[in-house]
Image (cartoon, rainbow, N blue to C red):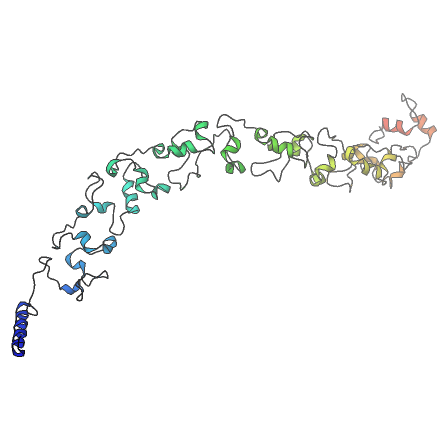
Length: 419
């Protein structure tokens, strides 16, 4: 059994051994990172010696390689496979395998940046010097969308022909069906390379039928339902259904011409502008404001052109003077214009001059000559002139066919002159 004094001596001996074995405080140890003159606490946690995930106090830019973009988020050991930090390359290919096998050069930064592995802006600029500059929708697709099926992502052996990438789009097109219509596979003939979608087409319609107005906005298949072969260019060939269905007015019943351009333009079906002058009956004055049905009550075929055909009621109702009783002609335009019924432009001098020559100012009212107000076809000359039958017979004794009648007076003196 050990005595107390002996146990104290044993404890002091063990403590001395531990003190001798422990390194002196402040004595430097060899760094596993090689010649790396930095304080340990810049990277390590003093409590656990673990490198924390939080941002380090160590400034990587101090060694000439700042951590930017994608590099800032990687773990140290992703690049520093060896604890000797100097044993690491600074070229891109030292960490990043060249999937292009050197065919695009060794300057990765010509296409890539540390911010992101894809650099579209620089790729677009790089493509400008190639046979296929990137524009429109091409500027937004991934490189692999066109550069596909090539071993090792070799990007130099790609055809610049549209159909090389877009054969499926060509075969699948239905409006119109490109294959059935025999469209060429040179997509750029109709689709601009700078367009953002297939729907934007720059196809130029033949000059024999230029697309204007509503035609320019129509789908190809609306006319070319059976393909893009030769089509008639007359309106009715496409618009027979519209022609047959129109009821205001009824085109078919009225035997309207099937040349739609006579009334319609290419902008829209309505409003229509029928060129009535092409019928030989131009619409002027009040006729231009009348409804079509005012004259075409029984349809549009065979409509008479004489005035009384439409204006019989006006003719019959006129009492100043009474046209039917007076035997007025039904050729209304001899007195009236198309502007209005009144005032009348009746010119008596076209039949017998009463406003010119010797009869001017010799009458006051129509009844001075037209002694029967109800019938203006009856007139008297002998009632106005101061002569009697005996003297008149004597003066006309040598006139063949002479008769003491007003009608005979007009026959020999149609202009009211004595000779």
